[in-house]
Length: 362
Image (cartoon, rainbow, N blue to C red; front, side, top):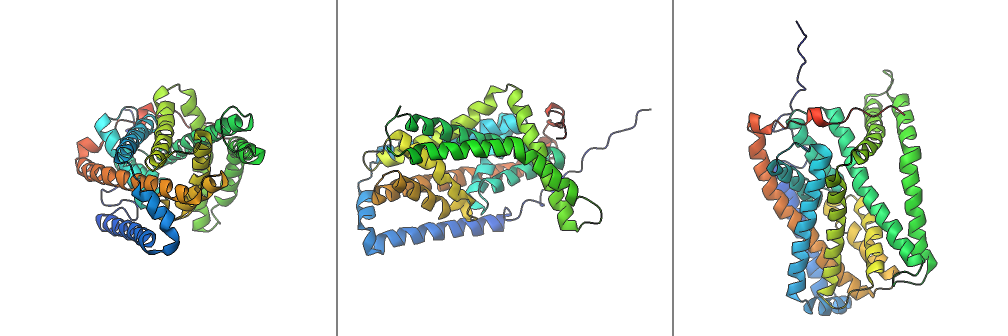
């Protein structure tokens, strides 16, 4: 008689990522509201921000409505990419609930997009997928979406450096980001897998401290995830790249529309390159990247020649949409997701068989 294969243990519906319990979500929503209220109060009362107040007063509602619609399309593109990366056999209803919940978590958790992926990983774990496969896919998905951003930096920066599009005349501002993006891409594809594997092997010995052994598993998952990103890209699933590209392009369009809502927008190439570089502020561990992303975007725009007041107005409008729309849509999706996952049959996602094999060890 063939030996039965045990199913992977299923995570408890109550064992969700830290901060995603209902009381934790309420607390983070209140924190987000308080931060936004503080920003609004500062804009209203601080004398030196008169230009920002005047800029906000010139808002054209139609452009803001368009920006909101484009943000919804960006969220839906993310759902498409999420489904293609994690489980193409999920129903679209479950894909929407999982992907949108991840985006909502990214708006609320201090670790931003990584926290959103952690919520998606929890739900997939709840459906019976193994931790190892989820970890590899999470790393791979994060790398693929980041690779799209790097490719956009290279494309736009090269066009600026060659004078093919209008923008700042400085070669440093146009070619510099291209060089950094190329170096980052080479490090991730060539050096990072071997380095992560080496560290994982050296820290995984039984005599090592428990924390080091846990970190070793994370490094192993990172190395495997880099290899799995290549497996996903070679699979030829156009929905993965289409979703990742759409997620970025629609969000870039939101950024542009928010500037058009208050007057003429800066040159597109400079605007988009400043956007891509300014997103590095998301590395600051604040809910939704508040403060870090805003400062990064405004600073990058000023470097590219946008007046400080105009940069602040456009970024404030963009960030308000980027935080609240995914938070609201994600909150509703998360409420529906929890209800689905309480149903044992509905929570089972038939994904285990359609995932590629573990990539070869490097």
